[in-house]
Every structure is written in structure tokens, then in C-alpha cells.
Length: 176
Image (tube, rainbow, N blue to C red; front, side, top):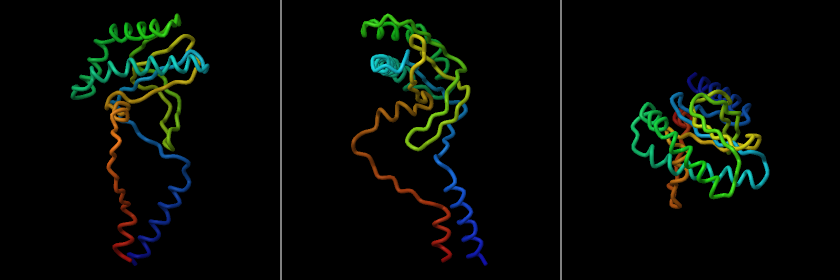
């Protein structure tokens, strides 16, 4: 009898999984995101967006590297807004750009995004938003806290292989 229950449950879960195009990842509710929106989709504007995001992300990493929670990260970002504005202005100047920009910290809209087979839901999220020029181009974003975008940048070449185990598969193997 147990065998049939396990097989039935496994089949149900398999069909539920096959019916989805991509995984939906839930980013923690207290997460703080970072988003940079380009002026347009031109190669120049997209390259400028990446220069700004890299420059600001570097400063944010330094600021947030020792924070112990989202409240502390939030206060650190809020107190650093003048420095971050200056960083964006200096980066634009270095790139010989005269584009205006807006820097906003608060609840900001994020569109739905599918990245590497994972769906990130659209919605209003606490975030640092930098809009370059008209803000009509593609955007770049990551999660600042917990530091998910920073972790990707810190990955080393020597990655350990991760072993994944599936609970249902283990149950089936145990009882069959």
C-alpha cells in the first residue's frame, strides 16, 4: 500500500513540476534590491548603464560588507545617498556623458524577469534605483541585501560540485 501512495504522490509532483516553464524564486521580503535603468537600448547607453552599476556596486559592497541585518543595511544605504549620487555623477563625467540621472531609495517598481530559467516576480520592492536620462532602456538589477549580486561577483574559478538530492526520489528508492 505504501508503495502505491509513494508512486501516486511522485507522479502528481512530477506532473506539477513539468507544467511550469521556469522556477519562481522568492527573494526574502526584507531584501534590498539595486536597479540601474539605461537611457535607451543603444550600445552606448547600455555600456554606460553597466559602468554606473559596476561603480556604485563596488562602493555598496564596501559599505555593506559588515552589516548584520536588513535594518543596518537600510540605514547604511540611506546615510550614503549623497556619496552614491556623487559616485554616479563622477562616473558619468568620466565617461564624458551629460545625461541627467535620478537616484531614489524606497519602494520602486521592478518588472518580471526570467534569468537562467528562474522567474523573478514583478512588483514594488525596497530598492536603490538609478535612472539614467529618460530611463527607456533595459535595466540591470540584483539583490543588495542579502548580498546576492555581490556573491556572484565573488565566485572563484574553483567551484565545488554541489550534490542535489530529491526527497521523493529517496523515498521511492527506500521503499522499492
